[in-house]
Image 1 (tube, rainbow, N blue to C red):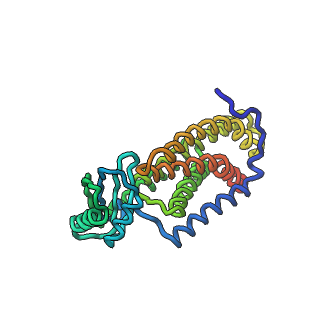
Image 2 (cartoon, one colour):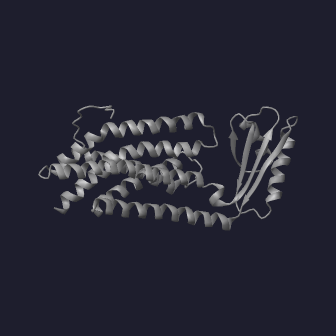
Amino acid sequence: MINLIKKTNIDFISKRYIFFAVSSLALAAGIVSVAVKGTNMGLDFTGGTMLQVKFVNPITIAEVRQAVKAADIETTIQTFTGRNAFALKVKGKQENVNEIADKILQGLKTNIPGNTFIEERRDYVGPVVGRDLSKKALFAIILSLFGIIIYVAFRFSNPIWGAAGVIALLHDVFVTFGAMSITNREVDLVVVAALLTIAGYSINDTIVIFDRMRENLNKFPKMRLGELVNVSINETLSRTLITNFTVLGVVAILFFFGGDVINNFAFAMLVGSISGTYSTIAIATPLVYQWERRSK
């Protein structure tokens, strides 16, 4: 096994209140943003029209946005890097999808003369479908969290450990969701998939430290809980950093070079990976210590 950091002896438990304060600030910032600005929900949840066009000659997204704005249409525009193609989204409960799409096409023809384009795709999501997708996405998140807490509670024969692990991954999901709101990024089904991935990634990292804590409890039954938690975190610190730096490297490449199509997904994964690393060390295990200490 590669040891990135050797013989560390960091007292994480003594700094637990600082960790809790930092997490509280991050969560509060996200809650305030959601309450004040709201969340930029995608067509999957709001319903609306999506039109994808590809231009023959090079054109910038600013020119496309200006052309659509001149046609008096409010759209969200997404570019496809290297393809000279754009996805134009109009959110709302349009009754006639073809009328909206044709209005966009006419606006592009009128305001971008001399640059022909072809229509590659035309989609419409109705309000009923949007509400149904919203319910299913929320149900998927709740069901996955419920399954995780049961699994961890049975695996370690301790509901406190299971609850601490789920609180840590809830922390990661809410921090990521808050970051999406603060940066006004669109939340669609792909981002929901990222949130579920973050939850699984976070609890997996937490379980590694919990396993080491269980082993040390059997080997050193008389060791104080605070010391045991610190020893367990320090012993697995090298593994945690190697794993998470590898994931962060891949996600960072997707974020900076993956293009606009997966940029929101990559951003959510980037924030979630950083938060997951932090919560494993600074939230989950200190919570176990805090609860066990108070229960005794």
